[in-house]
Image (cartoon, rainbow, N blue to C red):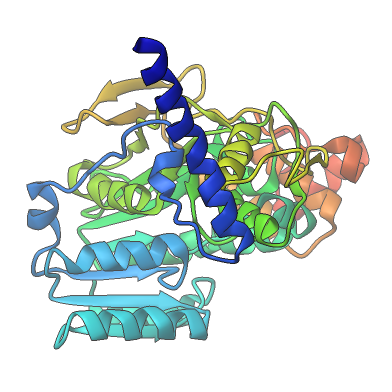
Length: 411
């Protein structure tokens, strides 16, 4: 009797992939819930604190057309802000989220603003006109390999774009400014990670006793389903019949869903006192290879038979393992059991100014000079010297220091 039951269960379990495989081969869509790929239960961060924080407030979201920014905008509307300002330089993406919100929330005060966060005059005009109470700063260049090839753009957008928006928030006495950061800012090996670490330090430097705006940052892991992330890429590769490209069999990442990431940004603004960096409890990291195998299985296919997997090698700036905090960082709990806060020694205003002066002097310079300047600002940054030939010789160092207005002795 027991053997019969076991055989029946085995048939049912094995039948699921076969039926799914038949649907996939017939061209029928196979539904995949991204939250099932986390390896943990999704975290729901919606609390009464968010209602108190956002209700009746003027809220501004930068990068509002992106995956995270648009979801922040959707989530914000649930808490009845008096006005929601959607700021993005990508006109088409901005059009889509503006249209969606106006269709769903009839008569809501939603204002689309086409603007580049690097354009200080335009950003200041928007801030002075609307006087936002809460700013969620999601605009950034995020793709690691792309920024390795375009380091000047990472510095312009991630560092100086953050400075423009943060300064505008301070100038209009906003209640809170929340910067979206990344786990790649911890012991960075990439231009993107180093630029985000500098942005973190600048935002922290603005928290002074004279400052009424609370400045905080939120570090993310990888976001499932976001634009350019691994899951949509794998899904397209499966649709095309493969192969699935994985950089390394041991590559691991922390993952979260778009709603989790967006709610974390909002929650950080609600509970932050100023100067903190918040991190969500994202459980154990997930191997990218395991994620690829799971997606193949959920489509009713078999790796190696129906879909091949190819290992392409680690790309410039990538790590095998991501970290959520430095070894010397101290963590403490918050009012939400799934959110931790990392207390770091903040950068002083003078330190932040030196970093920005140094980067401002090389932002249009050669790849080598920009990468070296980033390393001067973030000592723990370890650039991919083999790929880009960054030679930290004394001549280069003197040129960088001269561009920043400092002396060799001051170094």
